[in-house]
Amino acid sequence: MAIPDVYRDTLVIDSMNNAGLTGDYLRTVRDAGVTAAMVPVSITDPFTAAVEKILDLRAMVAANADAAVIVRTVADIRSAKENGRLGLILALEDSRQLDKDLRKVELFHDLGVRRMQLVYTTLNDAGCGPGDRVDTGLSRFGVGLVEELQGRGVLLDLCHASPETLRDACAVATRPAIWSHTNARAVFDHPNNLTDEQLDLVAANGGVVGVSGIPFYAGGPGVRIDHMLDHVDHIVARIGVEHVGIGLAIFENHPRAFYDRFASLPREIYGDPPWSWPTGIATISEFPNLATALVGRGYDTDAVRAILGGNHLRVLEAAWA
Image 1 (spheres, rainbow, N blue to C red):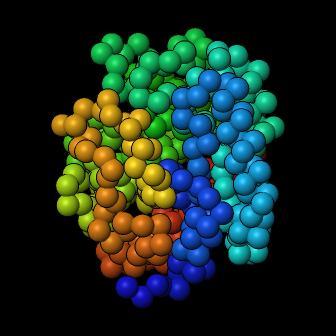
Image 2: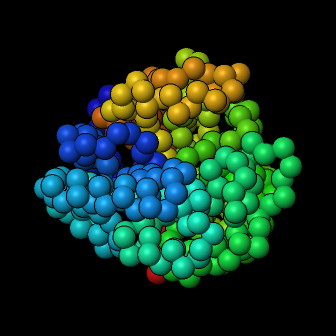
């Protein structure tokens, strides 16, 4: 596929990259034209382990400063584009790292974290995930956490939150949130995808859904890039183009042992790891194909810019202000 000019000129933001980060891989992402990628530096680690992972990643980025930079502000994203570097937005994919201590939000912010998920699939101190049998919603601690994140300038991520936790968090939130890597359940029925009623909450919040290439979210075995675009089309039709982004969430550059952590996932829902990303965007190097595919679906230049990065940038500006 030829790369449209709109892609070269766009601030491209991927709201989830699950790959194994190395200096060489940072250059691969940069060379794919991605301006900034949100990376989960910790999933469910306790506090000390999470801090150590952040320090290790910061050291790796410092050693590859020609290729990448840690993003702390929107200005850093624009600078990364101008200077031909990849901006890394550090994320915690859960809130267990806080050890139920809201003061640690400030510490993680000081370390460079700019996005935090409330819940990673199952019950924690903040709330519930879609895998919990009983959905008790956002806890008292969770209410305080939403307020602290948004007051501190850390982007709130509501991926993997249970229906009641998601609804409660949207009621508490005063700034836009992100659903960093999920899809539309009306297109493909997976418990981690969003129902139409949940998409309406995204719109009311002013947030953005990062449409994902995760195969068991996008369409199951044999999934193609067109399946991802089916989710984009549905979300645009339901709540508007201003609420759609890309959160590819690609798993690559990992050893086979990495996938052992997913051994407990029910195979009837998730399939067997290691997973293959959709044909047409099976690697991060194929990210430009999304621009071509969007143009092929009839999206105009403004819409393509919005989906590939502009909508995420708007939410970041509001969340980090």
